[in-house]
Amino acid sequence: MAFGNTAEAVPNAAATATEDARVSFIRKTYAHLGGAIGLFVLLEFLIFQMPFHQKLVASMIGTQAGWLIVLGLFMVTGWVAEKWASSDSSKTMQYLGLGLYTLAEAIIFVPLLYIAAHYSDPSVIPTAGLLTLLIFAGLTLTVFLTKKDFSFMRGALMVGSFAALGLIVCAILFGFSLGLIFSFFMVVLAAGYVLYYTSNVLHHYRTDQHVAAALALFSAIALLFWYILRILIALSSRR
Image 1 (cartoon, rainbow, N blue to C red):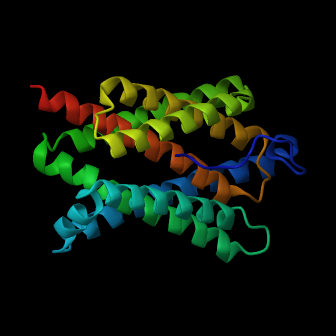
Image 2 (image 1 turned 30 degrees about the vertical axis):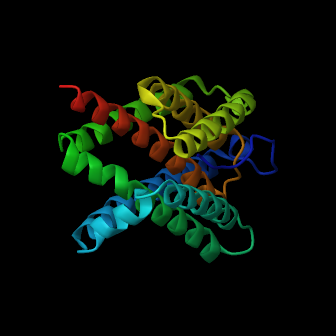
């Protein structure tokens, strides 16, 4: 699931900062987001060059318990990474948080990317990446042009996230498929997080919280990419 700062008003928020400070904050946020995406791609490339990556996939999804453990570790790691990235005491801790979360995303994506590369049309991976970036760009542009505060979505996003998590756990435990409808719902949920976090960048993050803001946006992009890729894999297998 996605992570990030709450929508509560904070002192020295970007919305009330000087124009120079606000522009600098936004540039740093998206520069760090680009860095996280680049690191994610690099990590995936390195993992798939390693001779044991097939064993890693098997150990992660070979059993129901294994995948539940992976999901649990990912959620705990994400929570720790978000706390580190939001640290006010240490810039080093902030960067460690962003790096840790990027590594966690890279690892949890390995089985899905392996399936896409070996049991589906390999073109689904770049296609999913392009669609993710286009949707993200469109939603980002919407927020920046309208300057609308989407913090009102927080409650609905949390309810949707917990409902989705419950369904995912039940699907793993009882062995049923969630199907395309669920994946489309998750794409909508991820799009909602993009709107929410992007509006937080404009209205609620402090100008020194660019690392935390980048982590939040990256988590939403990763969620969006995951389910777009799942949809494309499913559609490809039906041909």
